[in-house]
Amino acid sequence: MNTRASLGRTRAFLTVFLKEVKENLRDRRTLTSAFLTGPLLGPLILVMLLNITLNREFDKAEKPLPVPVIGAEYAPNLIAALKVDGIVPKPPIANPEVAVRKQDADVVLRISPDYGNAWRKGEPVQVELIYDSSQRDANTAVARVSQLVETYARQQGAMRLVARGLSPGTAWPVIAAKRDQATAQARAALMFSILPYFFVLTVFMGGMYLAIDLTAGERERQSLEPLFANPVPRWKILAGKLAAICVFSAASLLISLTAFAVVGRFLPTEKLGMELDLGLNFASRVLLLMLPLIVLLAALQSLVAAFAKSYREAQTYVSLLMFVPVIPSILLSTMPIKAQAWMYAVPLLGQHLGIMQLLRGDGVEPQQLGLCLLGSLVAAALGVLVTARLYQSERLAISG
Image 1 (tube, one colour):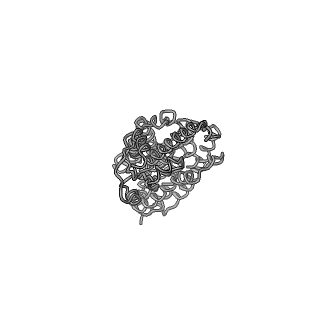
Image 2: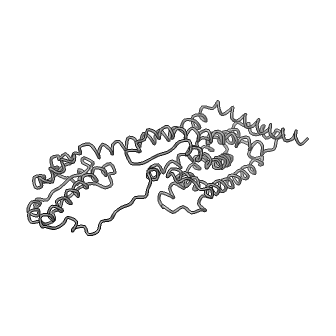
């Protein structure tokens, strides 16, 4: 009898699970969200934006840079030195302040008329760089011109000291030797710190429409009441539905991990002195970290959608829930803090910290992994229990 009862419970679970999976595999909206929009759009947008941005920055750093110069005739030697390093002097403009604000020029070089007299007297001379720091597109050009002017100033200062019989090192009695301990992977982690959010969002999008359809959708179609009328415990029905949502979310995450591993090869990280490893080892560990979160998000989506009376209302509620995964990313970007052990036990935050460590190449310690999995599993269990309690209510099956 016990064996038959166990088989009956398993069959009930599998029946609900297979029914939901088959029905939603025929739903174009669910398939698009789970297997195209969610997992593929993020990697494609990221690689396109980074390639376009980096290529533009490389062009500005390497190609000849046109710079309007006011008073070029006062400092011919400076202008000649700038030309050697790729600066192309352009005719002066009437109002340089307005020009940089309107982005007609990235940076304008202005040389004072008394440059020559001050230079001959051995006095410091001032060269103005006019730019708008709020224009991020101009930062590379400004930094390039500023560095060249400073390099020229140091060379001329050293030559003045030599002419007076002094060592050039006299002007710099203390030299700060910088020893950057960041690895190539650690530098890449700073640029790709948005990846944890992409992975969580992929899981969310992968199961969102399925969770809405299996609760509010069936409630609106009045198919939930006949399902509950079957002599099957409600928790088995919920387990089958949650398993279907988790399968779609996990499949979406796997597609996203594969897509990032592929597009990662097309990112010019070597030019930046960075190393990005999104291969099989990285993907398998991210999947392990995300497994309890998949269950937690499936339970939360089902719980929130169950309060809605229609499919459209459920879409509104669940879409608002989408902002929750943003919290760790915003928290860590606005308030950089040192990771503490207890943080790994906080769902979403623990996954974010773990994935960032994997990106840095540091790996996740067993204690940190255990805390991350345990904290998320406890939260997932609570979410499932609350949702199961809601499934016991007769009002859930009633539409309208």
